[in-house]
Image 1: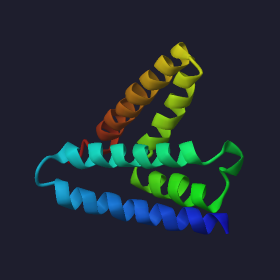
Image 2: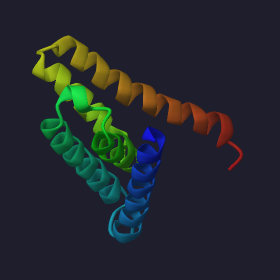
Image 3: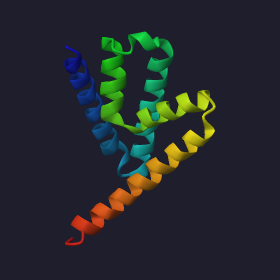
Image 4: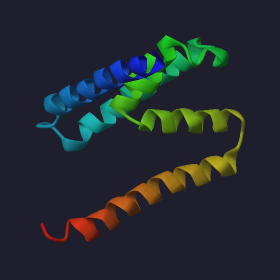
Length: 120
């Protein structure tokens, strides 16, 4: 049953992301991404703040946090993990995590483009 909640939430998140891209894309290519990331982070922050850690396998958590926010943006999960470490004052861990995510993901996109996009 848990997979169903994740599936439904993920579908809703993905459709929301697609709709936002259609609405904001003509104005600015990065606006829809920024707003999707911000919305997902806000929703995840709200659910995390009202959902006790022991209930993070509940239908609400799986539908909204794992599913919807995951379908809308994985940046929200990254932001929550970063927030948790900031809250624990793990400053160096935060800096490494931010750097790895930004540099590694950008480097992987660059590498993929060089390997597979060179024929374009």
